[in-house]
Image (cartoon, rainbow, N blue to C red; front, side):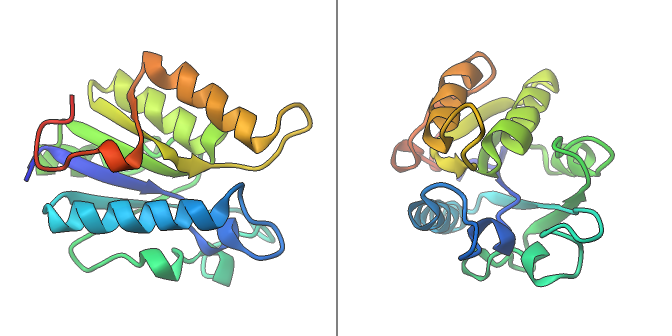
Length: 179
């Protein structure tokens, strides 16, 4: 077990997997998130859920069905759930203090959305001197007017190497240092 590592599950909420508008490759992503979460728990890794709070009428408006963490990824009592209102999981939240209290030095990021919350949180974690691991196949988004979701994901997996080590989920070893 690596006691200085935390797994950050970002915005893995029901609305992101909704049948009418799921993120790109949602079923494959859900399998990846579920598998990596189980492996992290088996290794005793500290798990943090970051839950986005949208505004009135948004699909992730607090206390609505879409706002809930996906039932396949339900937090346990030992997990931490942080509420956020911006793409940055550290901004105006207790995340930094909670990680410091736990002695966390490295964070593993996965979830949604690639170009918003994953990108912003990755850069901020790096700026706060965390060793950052981005799960290459553990984040997703939607098509944009300019790029397909697959292109957005591939672009960020390349771009974010300046701030993180980018690894496929299957290559992450929770029993050793993740450098």
